[in-house]
Length: 615
Image (cartoon, rainbow, N blue to C red; front, side, top):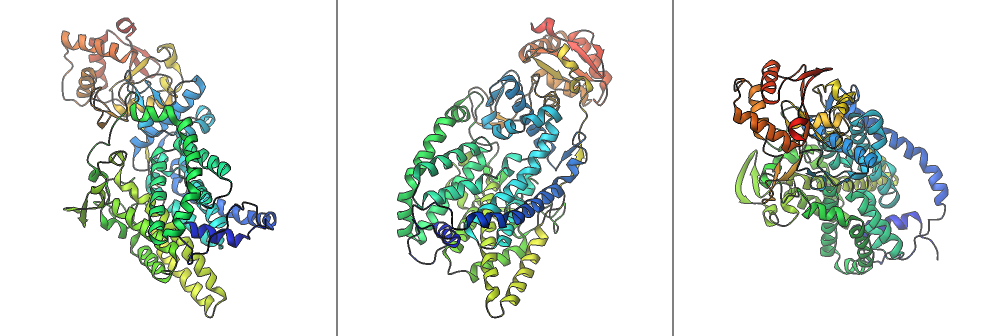
């Protein structure tokens, strides 16, 4: 069989995703490398290496302030989110080194535990980063993860675009740059590594395209299944958004090219079925854990519009962009991690111009419609005017009660929009580069380059902010706690604040259990509605009130009895008060002495051995 040349493969790829302008059937069955592929690879690697270096420098620029002091600073504007994800990485390293369940644990929210699949998951990154976590701690592993996510996502899109979709590597670079460094992923770098870990997404998309060409169904189906399974253990939410984006691609292509879509659908289905079988076999237990396991939840706390974007966000600039600032996104997004739109007027005008210019190409219609539909879904259940929400139903109202959709953060539909526009930008840049040999071609390319630069520059990222983190006692970081807390038992930090528990547990690499925490779980054992955290035990409330100065240090017999019942409930071995940093330290010490008997100083903490009450 004669192998198609590179351009044939790229044309075929473009047609599958809607790029072809005619009904000519694409080549089938051939998966042989193009003639001269080895020489092309040899010529390509210096440019590929340069592109990777540029993306690495860009990611380093975004995360630089965190790297200045990983143990003393928290990167971004959402410190609690970073704290939780550091704990997730610490627990993953603990689970690997102690052969424990990576999908559920009682080492946070003791004794009930946390369903990790119903939170951010991240089992695969946690496994891969375990050596870093064990050697250098969770803060370094987290920073490495969040940095490499930007690099990996950008390069993955560049790789797929340059090999399969466009001829111009500059156009592929532009597409990768937009997909990773537009406001969507930069804003999620404020504490959401599971949302920025999109480096497998381009390969999943391309494997689906390859399956639709027919040929090696078993091989391609198994490869797709392996990729989907890997993404399942990276971020289930990104996997769902990827599947939704692909479903929209199929539906839109079916609408604009029905005959070819049906032909390709028949070739696609056997490989998809094989991939699905592989995923279900490998992921059966974690799927059960997510949907029916202990501490599983249904839905997301709050209504969908609490986490939706405003329509006007698409023409504004993100907080961490060249043209943005501290107030540029206020009122248009739920918080600084969810600025997944914010393309600004120049970029939208440029993309609209590209749509008009390339209106005869089906790929433009497909990408444009996908971008528009997902942008409208991100608005929530009602339309908005400025920062005000109206009573007029919007598209998401049609699907808000469907399973899985009811647990989504609505603003994240715009992540699909970003990918659609990034690929569209690459295609438009590729078509622009092809104008060079035409009359006035160089002038056209120069004008187009200026327009792209003018639209792209305002949305390029500035470094994420950083803030100091509360110090964790040496008693925890040095491992001295091991002399006072048995494996699997609970250490209770005072005050019993959810993030104090998380930071201390993370610093100890999840070596001890902690009460409360920062996670999504059910309202109660009989109500699986999703909520943040748990209601504090009475003693936790008492200590918080003392720390805040809302009550004095007098405690009665009932409070003493409750305090000892609470440490039994937590399965605690020790209650620990930092020697410095806690508000109203002496008042807290007085109360703890009354509740558990005299404490003693151990290094830089005061410790109450509560094993006589809990064993």
